[in-house]
Image (tube, rainbow over all chains, first blue to last red; front, side):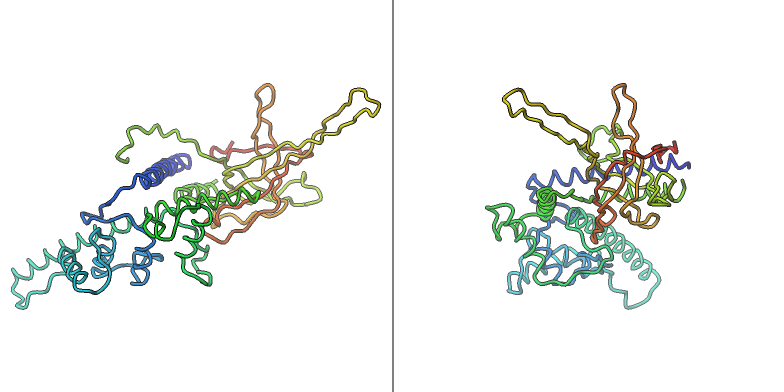
Length: 235
Length: 150
């Protein structure tokens, strides 16, 4: 493949990425009530969900680690439309009811007597559970990726700066300062896809107001990075 | 392909231009040549031809007059780099590009000299916001399109 062809291929991928980003951004403002994670219903991710997931140490939150079935089930429960927080009787009952639907991706218990036909059947069930688990994790990651697509940038080397207050405070403070009328309660319920777009707009507006050129970043810009790498190593 | 995508001609503009950036070998004599730093992507650039307006009012009540002389062409730009293959840009680095056209439609090649680049330390660290100024005395200004090598 020539350099030109490789660049055209990356460019085609970039166009797809741009199209996807545009659809996710526009759809965020349609007020959709539910999304789908491999058959599991989910509400649009909010900052409240992020706080709960972070407190639980969920691997679906940045820096995104490998989840197990327990963590996947917990994640699906937190973003489920029927999620009830707390440990009171009603919450526990609802949680247990939901967790039963997650048994399909847990490894089945090994048969006590290792008869060949039982082992074979168990292996088939393990394979099926693993397949469902993989597909659900992929869908959950895609849900998170689209929900956090426009989140404010973190440091280049992955390290985090010292925190003096919660991220939620930062986001809510920034939005309330720039959009009078928004309040703390409403911001908690807004989807992150909407909030992070507003934060980008604030960032751009503030830079322009200060006479600076705003520097913005899209995930699709990674494709430009690939083109630049090709041009610099092959040209 | 996405649900509401019915047709994609693939002809979405690049949204930027690719340029080769150089660092002068002798800053006192940049026309003597420079060392190529690599290829960068200019995401946005806004060169503005400067002008100096001088007014000469006639204090005796007659008609006043004024004249304009060219100032430097200056502006801002956002440039993206690949961190693995190219260095951070610095004051005095430059690139050649043809952004305008003259009266007969021929491209005007100019040398844009960089100053005041920022070095952001966040996810957008691959993009730099910087200022540019056109070198009016540059010679051998030959923009190259790194995409096709011409």
